[in-house]
Amino acid sequence: MSTSGSGPNTAANGIPAVTLSDEVRDAVASGAPVVALESTIIAHGLPRPRNLRVARELEEIVREQGAVPATVAVLDGVPRVGLTEEQVERVAEDVSLRKLGFRDLAPALAAGASGATTVSGTAFLAARAGIRVFGTGGLGGVHRDWVTVQDESADLGLLARTRITVVCAGVKSILDVPATLQRLETLGIGVLGFGTDRFPGFYLSDSGEPVDWTVDSARHVADVMAAQDALGGHDSALIVANPVPRELQLDPELHDRVLADALAAAEAGGVTGQAITPFLLGYLTEHTCGASLESNLAAVRGNVRLAAGIAVRWSQRA
Ligand code: PSU
Ligand code: MN
Image (cartoon, rainbow, N blue to C red; front, side, top):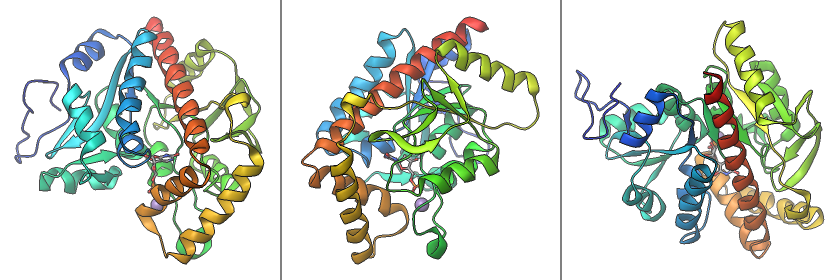
């Protein structure tokens, strides 16, 4: 793996290995706090041109907490952890960027392609770069029509075998939330409710489902991470489920109504596979007149802030 920010280190087969920005490389090497940020949310999860402002704002939130942001993407076949300002702009503006889950990384590298990384792609590359904390919006999960299409996000399987702490606002209600929680249990992925004993519902502070473990401070999360490491065994992630503040959540009635319409529109339009999540998110934004976008952003901001706080705590233990 390359740790060079100045030009990728080319592996024996001619394919560039993971490239860290100079700032991220130095921070990782010195044990300073670093927070990984995904790029799919920027490229495919938020409307342009707002997405660029959000990408910059998220990096700024991490810095305000005293940590280093490491936005992850694949650009021209190079997997990058930590982007320059120009690279962040490209992620936000280039409409040809693909959506890359973990399994897409190798073909993208081989083809010299560019793409934004999902939770699975980001978590993999961040862990390879030595980063332990990752802040995002919502995880992928089990889709509601799983029985017929078996669409379960690769996020879950990847997190079952990657030692990283992911701060999220739960999973979107476009998914089957109880089934997703069940799969997390089956896969052995720990879930902590941050200041709550309810699993958050992304746009909503409460999905209606319980969580088994509650923590109330970044220090407590770091204690759980240390216990994971002390136990040893195979690597798995830790999910910190951080609810959007109740006063910033989407009106639950509006949420339920528009969600039902969105699911019907996806079915009528035959939208499936990688396209379904961006489709449903776009539909919700449009049909709530932007209200879903505001709760979405409130959730992401809160998660990234908390992720930075956890990264700071974690770095103090070392
Ligand atoms: N949930 C959101 N916004 C998003 C995503 C999920 O609220 O942008 C993105 C994340 O990058 C996540 C991906 O990893 O969608 C999951 O996609 P799929 O279901 O195709 O695995
Ligand atoms: Mn899928």
